[in-house]
Image 1 (spheres, rainbow, N blue to C red):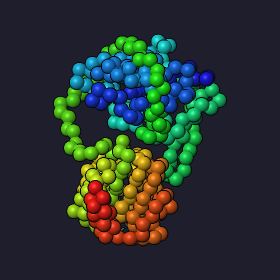
Image 2 (image 1 turned 30 degrees about the vertical axis):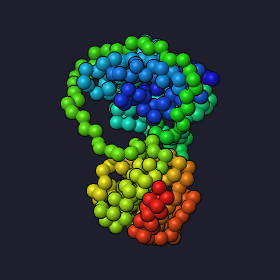
Image 3 (image 1 turned 45 degrees about the horizontal axis):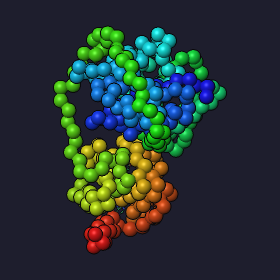
Image 4 (image 1 turned 60 degrees about the vertical axis):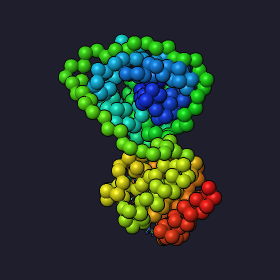
Length: 322
Ligand SMILES: Cc1cc2nc3c(=O)[nH]c(=O)nc-3n(C[C@H](O)[C@H](O)[C@H](O)COP(=O)(O)OP(=O)(O)OC[C@H]3O[C@@H](n4cnc5c(N)ncnc54)[C@H](O)[C@@H]3O)c2cc1C
């Protein structure tokens, strides 16, 4: 392997690294001789699981004192690069904090950032990244041509999260140098959106509704069907923009990427911006009254019909079976 060291900025929520972070650690293992993670807050307590997925060292930025990770985490990584102990590449999940760290790190290192990465492979001694462009209609391969660490912001579900059975990672303190006024913001409140059932981007079954539902009140059919299938309810942007459901339900280019075992698209046309977020699902079922709807191009099972008739029948049949 010609790439010596990759660092993954690993986010920890409720005491566990996020799936997106574990996906990056797993994939980095296939690319570099050493994979190390950068954590903060309670992150060091996850050295065991990060090790299991392939990280050998965890750089702990430490307690952020109620601040955001952007400035201190970027400063900590930049300090390691300046000291000559930094990585050849930094991988970050495409989340609010991941993007914040990437932007600040880019400024500190005077290096560009490659965003919206959906693939990453070794090429000519460096890394070549793939990007979905034009709403996912084209895949572009790109490389850094100048010397210095590459910064890659990677979309969730681009790689599988696979444990390798590694030993717990060694924890190394990596406090940030003084970040001055750039680190002045403090988190004063957190709002956790209420949810029943699995998280949208981790569910095995996702049932999504679109404008074909006709009106907001009909979204209850999607929630009911998702609940009966122990899945999560998703949505197209059209009905998020219309205010029928919150943004957290949105699947697609500007929403979540999902890869469930079963994805059901109900009354969704299949715009490229929607499909880029769900077309890699293992089995796709589409219900649409228009037999020429683009969603049928990616569907494994296409049902031409009215969602208002088909979904209640499906619900009835599942309830009868249960
Ligand atoms: C920069 C950008 C980013 C975007 N990001 C996203 C994104 O992240 N996610 C996303 O979803 N979209 C996104 N969009 C919007 C996207 O282009 C589409 O406008 C949107 O996906 C359409 O949603 P829809 O399929 O629900 O609605 P429509 O396109 O209006 O489709 C409704 C479908 O329902 C069918 N239908 C109507 N009545 C019934 C019925 N009774 N029974 C069965 N079928 C019926 C119709 O035949 C039609 O196919 C983005 C657009 C842009 C420009």
